[in-house]
Length: 203
Image 1 (spheres, one colour):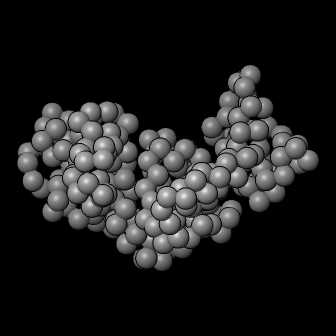
Image 2 (cartoon, rainbow, N blue to C red; image 1 turned 90 degrees about the vertical axis):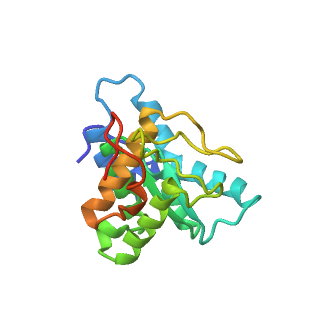
């Protein structure tokens, strides 16, 4: 049951297929005293549709179906849903645990299940494959994880990794690592190179 009501006529998605998502999101992420709640509700109502528009732009450059996509900072999962419906193999991660759970519930509402929901080992395999992006299995062929500092670089340029190691990127890497270890041991071999720095590189 939601603590904030939604108008079924104005918000057919949130009151329909996405109702489980809305109930969780409104209880755990929205604040009842936030004066912008109506704005956030309107935004989430059309979030998947806007993400599908983004897919159309991406399709003009590269195919989406069958593509492995890592959505870092996936927030409430709208793009994960749009990617899954387009036939991609998306993996989402975020520093906000409540947002991750909201994304899982939203994806499940559309029939897009992950390993934790289905128990199907294929999703664990795909999650490990997506995690390998951090470790160098990306278009540049460079690891974003730094075993010396324990940090994670902020992203990729056309020919190299970004040298900045921000907190959000590092936390995204560590949360992904912990999530994999929660359902099956992540391959530690690539993490063994170098030494643990002040932040304590995982091993």
